[in-house]
View 1 (tube, helix red, strand yellow):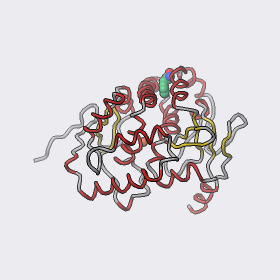
View 2 (spheres, protein in one colour; view 1 turned 60 degrees about the horizontal axis):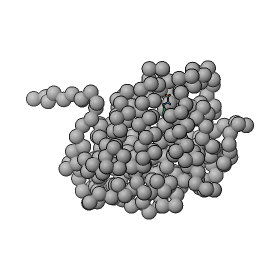
View 3 (cartoon, helix red, strand yellow; view 1 turned 90 degrees about the vertical axis):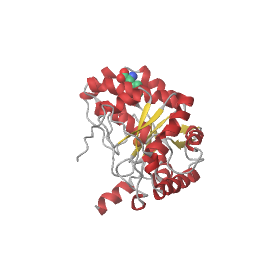
View 4 (cartoon, protein in one colour; view 1 turned 30 degrees about the horizontal axis):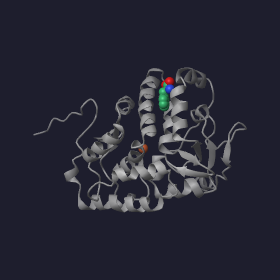
Length: 283
Ligand code: PHE
Ligand code: FE
């Protein structure tokens, strides 16, 4: 008999933690060890501090209920499981209510260095540590509220660029050094090296308008990274700015080429773009 199954309106499903196999838990441990070893000194100290929240009583893929209990105490956030990508509106609603949606599947050994769809390692290792930081936690909630507003203004694509260049691929300045905080970087061995050390990408000071005019790549390392001064500054700038007039203004302006540097940019690194050039030659 066919089983009637309907996704609930908020798209959440049970994590089914007991169903993970030893091989899947071992994959988490392998990825966790590799990143936890390389990130101190590279990632923002706030991220490293937040990693402790993932060190739950036993090794393996974290149990979302236990994780949520700890996160709730720290910042009032929870982690809920979803089957995969969810509609924008559902995603924003969850964030606005301090719920982070995470995939529950884990990559296979063949996908250890590259996968297109976010798995539980990206979603949990990449995103959850900073949700334990009060300032970043507030930024994520504000982003969710801003998303609901952007939807009604037809500006989701603009706002998505802000998410991409901060939450997913952001760098932060610490003294003279740059540190990683974007989840897409810290959950990737290769990009954790590339984003800081490689001469290819541009590294530019964060500028809200500029970011919302810049397209991004989902299939390769970024060609441009934007560097914030601090999480406090990111939060302040985004909540104090009314995005509605900005969306209206940007609707009339062209996109900026993905690798361009403008005279108005605060340039930290002028990238060679050698990596992207080599890739397009090979393609
Ligand atoms: N201030 C934004 C608006 O007016 C909302 C927002 C806050 C968006 C934080 C992103 C991050 O829509
Ligand atoms: Fe992500």
